[in-house]
Length: 135
Image (tube, rainbow, N blue to C red; front, side):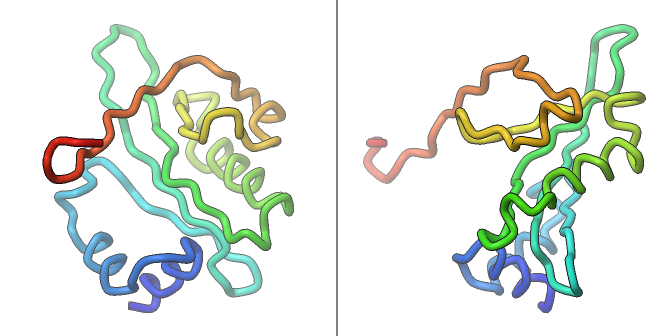
């Protein structure tokens, strides 16, 4: 429950119980691992990595970086760059594995260019409809 409360604080919304239930439900995120980044013993960021299957012969394995959330007071302090550095050195991203990163339109983290990330795909979202079929 302590992890769930830390995530609720990072997101600044929701209930710790819902975070705990989502973390415990292995069926909702097949192939996905959730991570946190800590600074001074406090959770300052959360992100998820999903392994994407590839059919293309000779294609490198691919990871999808998403659900990136930083505490507002740590934005611009290098936390995102630390995460990218860990991905490169710890998981071989950029060497042994490709990485696709989901960011809001027009808001790529400044460190992306330093690590060689470039715009390559466009993402389209099919929103969940409210009751009655209206968006």
